Amino acid sequence: MGWRRYALCVVFPLVGFAQTQGNTGQIGGLVYDPSGALIRAAHVQIISIETGSMREVLTGEEGQYRAVLIPPGAYRIRVEASGFAPATAEGVLVTVGAGVDQDFHLTLGTVTDAVTVTTPFVEVSRSEFGNGIARTT
Image (cartoon, rainbow, N blue to C red; front, side):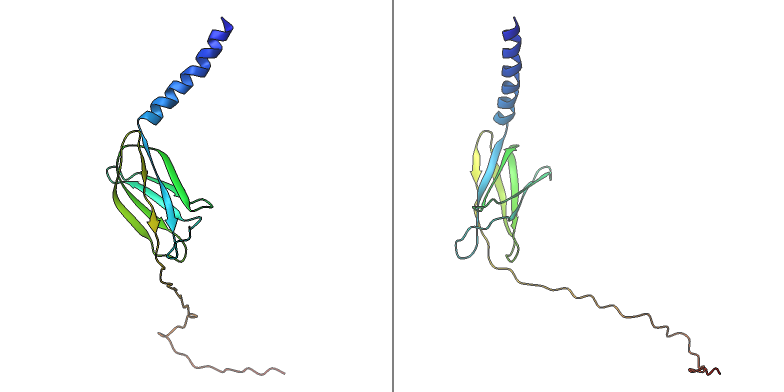
């Protein structure tokens, strides 16, 4: 009887896992720079158009990304990498049990710098004259 209980403990979690995967799909692809080289550590956002829920992944060493267990529906995919302009794919359709490949070819971005200048506080509403130097003996 003990082996049957063990068998049930092994089989039931596998059934639940198979049902979970059977109701979803996946999105993946590659991210390239303008020369065709793959970009590692690019930020990929996968956003459900219907619900607004978002999943974020990074590209791997070979410029690849993959998000699994994605509920069926339409998605917006946005990719950002340092030094490149962001790229977006709209209306990427995920269906049950299918994988969607969506590659991105990023273009060079423009560099923008923000400079914040602060000045010491100067009171302009009041003026006073006084002795600037005091002499003591």
